[in-house]
Each structure stands twice: as C-alpha cells, then as structure tokens.
Figure 1 (cartoon, rainbow, N blue to C red):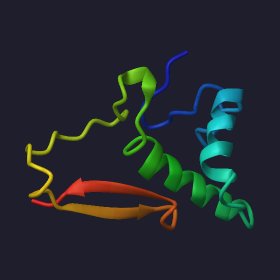
Figure 2: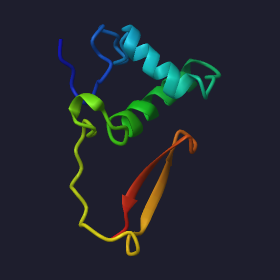
Figure 3: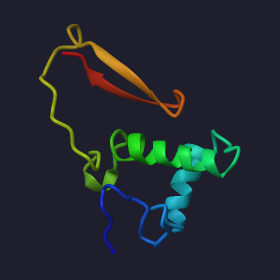
Length: 103
C-alpha cells in the first residue's frame, strides 16, 4: 500500500493520518515521545501536526529515498564553507531545526 508525502503514516486508515504500524509508532516514539509528554489530546494533535508537517516530510532525511526528504526543495547555489550563512528555524520548540542558506 502506498502513501502520499502529505500523509506519511496513513497506511492503517486513521483519520488523523497516523498509522498504528509498529515501525511508524517506533519512529514517533523515538523521535518525539521520548522527548515530549503531551498534556492532553489537543497538545498531542498539535505535536503530531508540527512533527509531520514541518519536520518529517520537509527536513528529516529518509534512507529509502536515497537520504532525501519526501518534499524536495530547490538545490541552493553552491558556496564555500567560509561564505555560507545558514538560518536555523526551530521545530517543536527547538528539539529539531531546519537549516536554509541565506541568499
């Protein structure tokens, strides 16, 4: 069964787009719930929305697709280490970061 990049954990049919497959739950547990304890259902949904919407599809690399992200960005211009300036955007309160080159 295939999934779209918009719902990476949708194999098992939950309306929220999160599957109950062991591997999906293991990823969520290791990368999110080992670090954050949700206060209530609304907080849980907010965490999942940010994790999947801002991190899992856009920043986190995936071995199965040659260490690329499911949503491919334009390749930035090549620069040297000395001239490269990066902008960091915190995700999930700074637990993860998204880095982009500043033009």
